[in-house]
Image 1 (cartoon, rainbow, N blue to C red):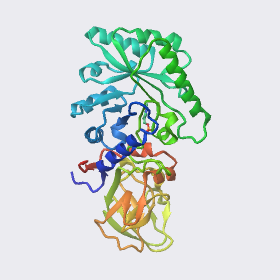
Image 2 (cartoon, rainbow, N blue to C red; image 1 turned 180 degrees about the vertical axis):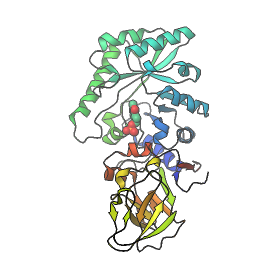
Image 3 (cartoon, rainbow, N blue to C red; image 1 turned 135 degrees about the vertical axis):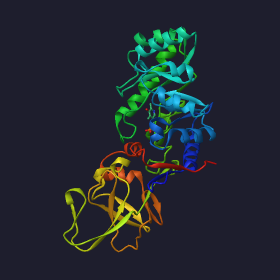
Length: 376
Ligand SMILES: *Cc1c(COP(=O)(O)O)cnc(C)c1O
């Protein structure tokens, strides 16, 4: 392929982020190292699941996580050998892949537990699973305050073997939210209740990226970073791991256009030049994940300078005002990343358009070729 718009995926940065996070969470770990589940769901947050997974595996990750069975099967078929946890609700999925591709299921509801037990018995197999406790997110998971009724059956299922117990925080990224602490307390209580029923999980895990940054009391026996692995968190303060952005989105100037006063640019002609302007036409648009709200808000980097995005974000094109810059057709343009002394982060863009970096990363479209360096 030779389209000019590409996402450069810096696997060295991914491995760096994995290593600094893994080292960071050993703080106050006591006996036994805290484990890191590297989250590569949703095509590794748009970065490309297989290259990201293989780089993490080479970096020593012993367990990855994906959203559903199909994602896990695709990783296995691509050659990933390390352990793979499936987060998703199993009750609706085809369970075959769990057995044929050696995936670790999450058991999040009694219905899913029954289905898994039946499938395991039918195959004469024993399955190790992670039990998910709902401590306040109120999506899936066994309710923390109802375990006396719901847990005994799954714990007694003859073909199921409990490996770990986990929960997921709803407000780890909301400063000062009391529900964050209450979820930690509920999880600790749930672990005690399960122990009282004879459950002996090898380990426990709870923290997403925001909780990793919040501190050790939220980490339990292991952590599950996604966004932080991709370097799309605001850089931490003192004592926090310094992360590097993994995705760099670049294109090239496809055409330059002289605009006369009174001319409008793009659909709706919402940008109207009040003086002679030069705009650079860039070959990527909302089909590639460029948010339409970047019109009049966002910037790109051209010739080491910020150039504002003007006129409508179209399906396949955007325009940037490069008046006064020595821009030429073919010049490299940075949409997310660095050029010269300037940088545009995915965090900045998410703020501009009123969304979160997660969404923007996941939306980098299939027409954008991902180019990888070799993590080493
Ligand atoms: C996506 C996900 C994570 C990772 O969350 P980040 O905020 O990206 O770190 C962790 N745990 C579960 C259960 C998830 O679904």
